[in-house]
Length: 238
Image 1 (tube, rainbow, N blue to C red):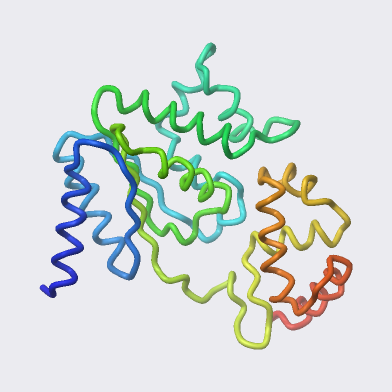
Image 2: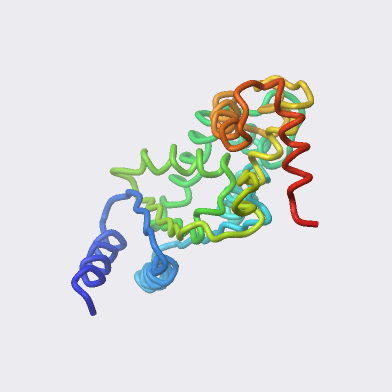
């Protein structure tokens, strides 16, 4: 076993056995195996383990990853009188109206996890984090930065993004599914706020996506989106 691998396993073992919460990202091809080992070890220690795996086909569905991760806890959260019911229900039940902010959802998720960890420490194990939808990734980031001192740990394995439908190859655009949908909606005339309401994203997140979309399509204005998307469609493999 190499020195690097030994150090990684030692750091991971220290993380899983820590008495207080925190977050850790495992990067590289070995991340999934390390995460599986850590989750199994946590269960042997009597910790509650919630698992989720990023799925490419769901990477454009807002909060799909978060729903997968929290699903075992949602029945309790849906009970009348639960303080987090409104925010989580608005997200997962696709309730009409303005979607909750990342702050509101993050606070609700933190409260749900804290309550779940009251009986025993909790480990959130997320594999293939590179395929998490952006909305879930935003909330996981918010939560992960606020776990210190608690009894919840977040462990995410991220592998290099493999070529596939999200990267269409040399000579063509490399828009992700999320970016393509946002670009389509923007080309139809919707504002960032309107797009965000439809996709359960913040207007700022929509703007960040478009900031990456423009250079990928070789354009500088929103008005050029429709023609650029049309050209990209013609270049796509049939």
